Length: 161
Ligand code: DQA
Image 1 (cartoon, rainbow, N blue to C red):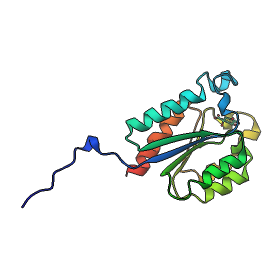
Image 2 (image 1 turned 45 degrees about the vertical axis):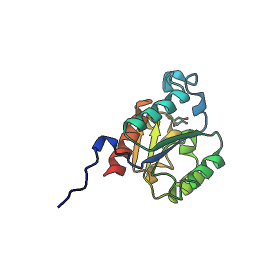
Image 3 (image 1 turned 60 degrees about the horizontal axis):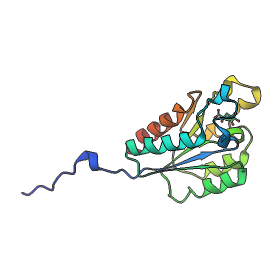
Image 4 (image 1 turned 90 degrees about the vertical axis):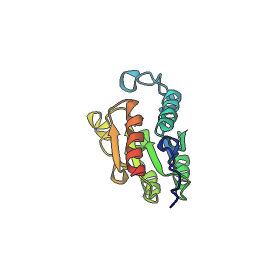
């Protein structure tokens, strides 16, 4: 009986397509409240997420930022049709205010990881509530930019099982 050749494991590209969304003011990272958010820029975070995605053999890591709630809602709606297999979202201040983003996320069936650079629970009271947390598979907060790597690793764990 002939055996079918085995594929080398290392050449296997798993079809994991991740969308990373950033909300308002995160485009100012690097200069904005550096005592809280550090000096790493958003571009540096996005570049490092793409590198991390490659090291995890993901097919794609797409990163977008908007200061506009409706644009974020449009992008979340665009992820309903199977274009992505996982979402990482740091909705910034909209985390604490946006029922529109909450409702949009409700339509997704893919895993959602909520990320915050700081830990909002240790800050002002108005940051203690998240409209995203009830819909998230995991919440990663207070780990600085390392939180994004942690979120990508979490998605690798979930989507490759
Ligand atoms: C943040 C925390 C939010 O409370 C704040 O509005 C942000 C950034 C964070 O990543 O720590 O803009 O989401």
